Length: 363
Image (cartoon, rainbow, N blue to C red; front, top):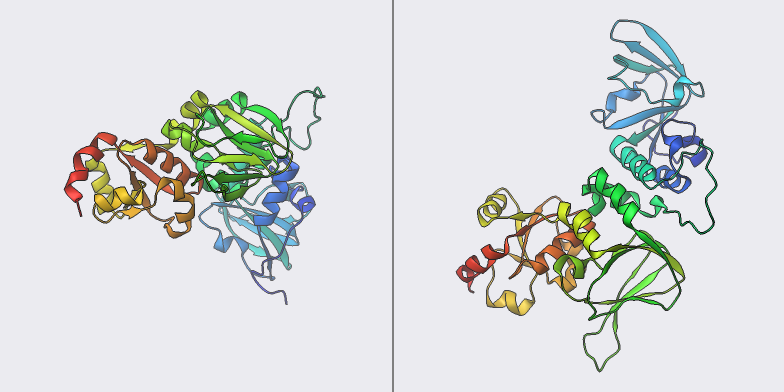
C-alpha cells in the first residue's frame, strides 16, 4: 500500500511535461521543483479533497484519475496524455469530485508563486522553453530573472511592485561586469545607484573606528540587493561593498529607484492612522540610535537602530505590521524598505508627526 500524502521529490524534466510550467526558464524550473508539493495517493481516494481553496494547481504525474462533473458525466484522466499536461481545474471544468482509480502521483503548485515566476520570466525577456530564441549579439547582456529567488518574489520587496514597475525596472537597469576586489560602494560617499547581484559574491563591511580594521557585516550572493539605505533616506553610504569574486551586477539610477521601487513600497501614515494600526495589533519600531531612544521614545516601541536593523530581523514577527519612525522620516523610510526586502510589512510615521509627538514620551 502506498502511504498517503508522503512528500517526495520531482525532477525538472517531469515538471516540464506540464503547462504552463514548461514555459519557465531552466533556473526558475529548478527552483520550482525544490518547493513543489508532491504526493503519492492510494487507490479510491479523492486528491482534490484537500485542495487549498483553489490556491494550488494540481497535476497528475502517474496513474489514472476518475473525474465526475457537476452534470453527472464521468471521465478518466490518464497521466502522460495531452489532457494531463494541464491542471485539474475543479472550478473552470465544473468538477464535482475525483477518485484515484489506481495508485497515483500528483504534484501541487502554488498558483501565486507560479504566476509570479511566469511574470518575471516574461518581463525580463526570457523566451519560453519551446520558443526558438532569436540570435542575440554577443555584446548584448541578458538579464536573468531567475537570480531573483522565489522567496524574494513572493514575500520580499519585489512582491509589492506593480507589473508595470517590474518591466520598467528591467528596461532601466544597467548591467556591469565586476571583478574580485572591486569596491562597488564606499562608506561615506553619496548614494547614486541601487545594485542587484546577478552573479557573484560580495562582502559588506563598515568602519566604526578609523584606527581599526573594517568590521565585516555580511556576505551577499546572487539575488541580493544593496545600496538602498542611502537612496531611500537621501543620505551618504553607511557601508562599503566590495566584490569577493568576479561577477555581474545590475544597477538602477537613484531617480529610477525612487520612482519604481521606493514610491510603491514606502507608505506614510499619520499619527491617527498609526495609533489605529497599533490598536489593531501593529507595533512601533524606533530606528534611531539607542541614545536617542533612551532619551525619549514612543511608549512600547522596539528599538532597532537602522545601522543594525538586519541583525534584528529574526526577532521581528512576520505576522505583524510595524510602524517605523525616527526624527525626520529619512531613517524610517530606509528601514521600511529594508524590512520589505525580508518580507515584513511596515509603514512610516509622517515626519512632522514624530516631531510633535516625541515630547510626550520622555522616559
